[in-house]
Length: 146
Image 1 (cartoon, helix red, strand yellow):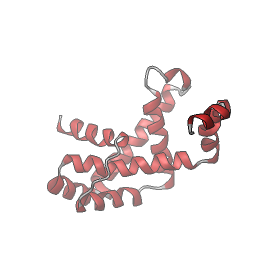
Image 2 (cartoon, rainbow, N blue to C red; image 1 turned 60 degrees about the vertical axis):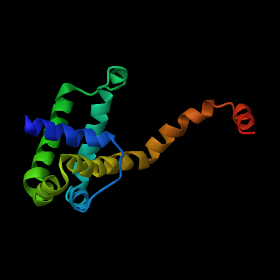
Image 3 (cartoon, rainbow, N blue to C red; image 1 turned 90 degrees about the horizontal axis):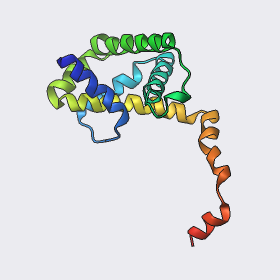
């Protein structure tokens, strides 16, 4: 039960954006960001995308197979387990003991933010994000700013 609650706290942190951090949280954040490979970061980005795309109102836009989802889930389980038990174990223990499980979750927030930033920096994604602007009525927009 504790592990599930702890994992839920960590995973929920990917969607929160509070930037206050303690010393141990900063050290853990640094460890998390520096101890994952580029491939693991891409897997994390894919996992975040899949998590959001599961929302019932937008799931129809995602055409990911259950086998692909299972593969990404396994990759995430392996990554998180390795981060918790090996790569950042000392930092995770220190932040939990000194700053609590909320600080642990917030440390993982930076990792999630980095993955989202990498996604947003892609030129194809940037173009896709800006594409709605073609439907603006520029005169209306200018008028509203007077």
